[in-house]
Image 1 (cartoon, rainbow, N blue to C red):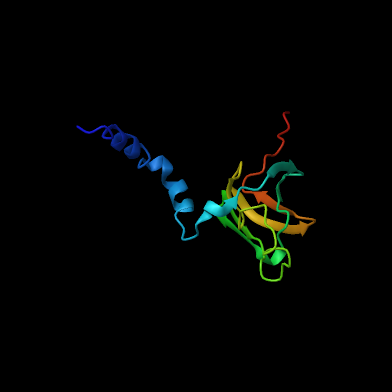
Image 2 (image 1 turned 90 degrees about the horizontal axis):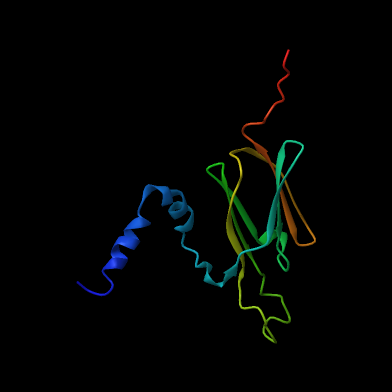
Length: 137
């Protein structure tokens, strides 16, 4: 028995079905090691779920947003390098952009609106189930 044999059982733990959703989202061809996770907030307002994601330095056309299985938001936003006069001169950030998967608090019926202003992406979503106040007689 080798010194690392105990790690086999540890690796087997992640083969469990509870990690299937994570594996499906994480198994893609993009190497995200040079991407940072953006700062974001999820709020509820007037029966809608609103996700606010901070993406400084990104242009609207470089944002890729996808709703997966009505519960996850996949985001990838790249910095544009080709017309940046400062890119080759000095670079203090060693990243290509932002990438993350955001687990939403409820299943989503539809994406109603998206806006990108001053480096903040706002995604307005309608949940599948809305709570309704029930009157008691």
